[in-house]
Image (cartoon, rainbow, N blue to C red; front, side, top):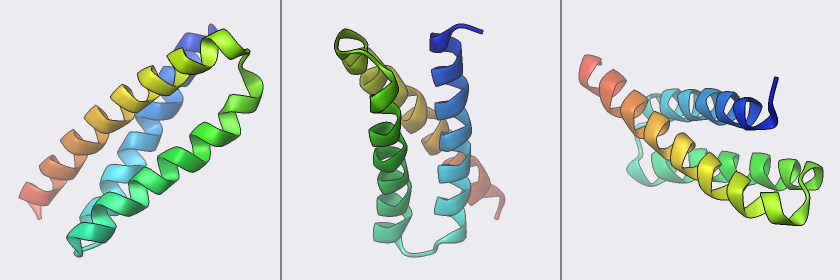
Length: 81
């Protein structure tokens, strides 16, 4: 499997988990902060595995994927609850 696909799958799963955490936490500040801290921790851990020119790609594509999935899951499950 290509590295790009693995990064996409990882950050999609991370966004789903972040969205579920945001639904579970009722405080707005913590609902935003905890998933973003989770993203930063995983990104810093993954930066060790990428060469310099691909790090920027991984950070931006991972962030876009994470934020879109996180917001969709958070809004969807918030409205269901």
